[in-house]
Image (cartoon, rainbow, N blue to C red; front, side, top):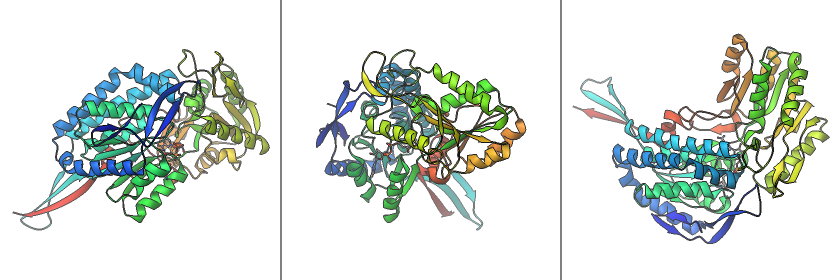
Length: 479
Ligand code: NAD
């Protein structure tokens, strides 16, 4: 049984939850303790008690712990990648890549702990000195989704600790295994008791305590829009700092002058890899009419060779959907697309058993054509391997369609025109733009985040993470 980490101790929970492998639902990954509200409060108390001393720890102490955590994650990438693929369902290469990203993030922020600096600024008044410094925010509550079970916790925990904050992490119920592995690694890396606490459990119970407790100074959240809105309301009500990364309906534009192979590869990756369960996935392919028919034919052909199977099996291109509920949502949207008049040209069927006969939540990637921008499948986040093609006349219409959404996380364009690529980078309303690349798959050392309905607050990752995890102090001295 995997326990919660509260004040440096492994403690049993009020309940136990079973972590199920979506590639083979007979396989139980492990039993994980579920904390209750009282235990969440104990974790917050421990983090509050530990914060002052941790905030005063030396940059070298913080570097050493984060660097050794990063090194252990990287050294165990095969084992942790296997755990991640088993609990979440992305393929082994994708899962291992995510583990490597998490390890690199810890190493990056180990270095950032040494680079926290400030400014010495001349005052406008004679004889006065001005210093601008950064201090930790205090206790931060981290609430994470199921689709990146190790990278998202890593990109919140590492900067939080690097800048001297203490942490209470509440990972997604569905995938506690990877978060537990990070807790175990950090505990053995020598973090003082209470600096990092893990409370696995329900959002409505454990997560809600983090939102409502005044000892939690800031909340960093990644997940759905609906939960993000609740979090914003709760944080505003008690004036806590917060940051939200939420959904997407990311467009990928394909222009007449695109290299067809580049466009198809980028679209297949953007739409279907990680079973389409990425906030940066592209589910809207906006294609100009000169290339439309060739592009659709090439997509349908390429999709024939996509192998949907056990996430941990060699040769699998796409693993299962994460659980029964998400599969039902994907199938519902496929039915909605059909009823709205879209043409399903490939995939869209659930597969009850994989090639070895194991029961799992499999879905053949679906491609819709003849769709219009008003259809629900083009407006709402489906969060599965379901992609639609929208036909447009030319670049101007493509850009307008790309921006016609309430979201703004990631956007892509396939083109060989420097003019259009340059214009698109400047004018598309998204936090991240990709030219001739998949809309997903981003570097770990640069800012990550979106605009409009996708994100709220400062960016995550890279040096930009300091905006959220520190607070600025301006000090004046009369010499
Ligand atoms: P979700 O909103 O259901 O859950 C996210 C987390 O919030 C979980 O840990 C959950 O337990 C917790 N939670 C639920 N109710 C809560 C409450 N009342 N108080 C506090 N916490 C609560 O999201 P999900 O289904 O786990 O993840 C999928 C969503 O995440 C998609 O919309 C996807 O686009 C989004 N996502 C966004 C990004 C990004 O960076 N923009 C990255 C990954 C995923």
